[in-house]
Image (cartoon, rainbow, N blue to C red; front, side):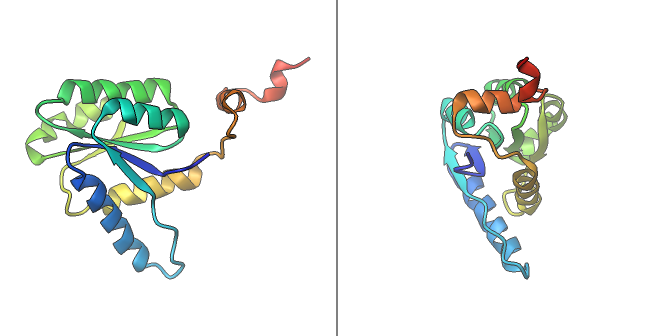
Length: 156
């Protein structure tokens, strides 16, 4: 179940738009013309969490702002703790780069501080998309697929 590849939780839509653009530019330079990333965005962490419930192996990008550092870092930790197949990353203005290592310690794959070149983020999302498992649509089957042992181990 992979409706979207990346969900960006931010205040303006700038990071999501720049991520799409960087992905388009990168893809246009490839001979194989790979499928573009499907990027959604919302301004609310609850919407991001709801998206993760439907895309448990997706990529979430959380914007750190001066007014949301604590909730955003908590969210990154919760993704790391609760959604083991998901990948999280953070974006922030340069003045918040001091939170880079904390965000990464809490589970973010990286923190990006320039919306001008998000190509590394696009490549990270592409790699995650290629490596993630195909999960079934049925919620119970999806839970079984995420358990650390084969389904047959539960039957006798």
